[in-house]
Image (cartoon, rainbow, N blue to C red):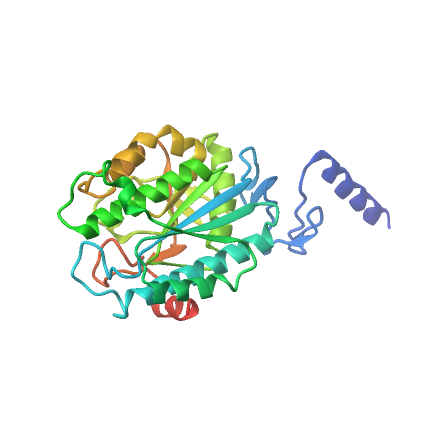
Length: 329
């Protein structure tokens, strides 16, 4: 009886002092009132990873603007190849969007205090395919905007290109970055329409962003895909602990990544130069940012770039591609 009373008082005192107690015998935390195999973290408050303990969240995520850039008419930009499963591009766009919507809904249910907005930046999608996209978005409860790219707007800014497809791609990217600059309040997530996402993707991105930025005391870039081309040389990297994933520092990404309003504005010149001409590599000026700022990607991947099966820029390793493809239908 005395032990029980002392235990209860100790738990109560620990809560008041801001400490968490772990009972390894029962494999639970009496202060958190949860089993240890459950999610112990509290968004915008603390991140807890066993056995590393607690990280106080100093960099809280308030909102995310998700910009989904799509063109369902181009099979693979700048390549004469077919994607894995060899279906029309609209199939990849719809599955990409569907998996993204699932991930957002999963996250919104878990973190209702964080505002998530989705805007689709559409580049020349034909009416039939656009109706399919609208039908998919209409099933969701939260507000989704669709903006059409005005190609004429960028004629005087973008340098003359070898073909219309390249100009169109640069225009849609420019539109995406300008929309972000104008509307981002906290975080912005740029997403292309040939990535298929695991349902916990947004959850892990947000919770890991808070944890890692609070530890580093600075905003960062995050890429949800574990790209195979980053394993082609013996490059040094740092491994960080996220919410439920290991993350590693990288110095290259494609055009799908998340960052903050602060970094978007600070490196606006790099974003601008990415859009005014076809660079080699395409992401040259984005990758230059990572020489100064931290960029991380997950181990293993939270999103998979569904390109050609032989592409070093595409399919992340150790993933059941067919299962992920089927689940996103």
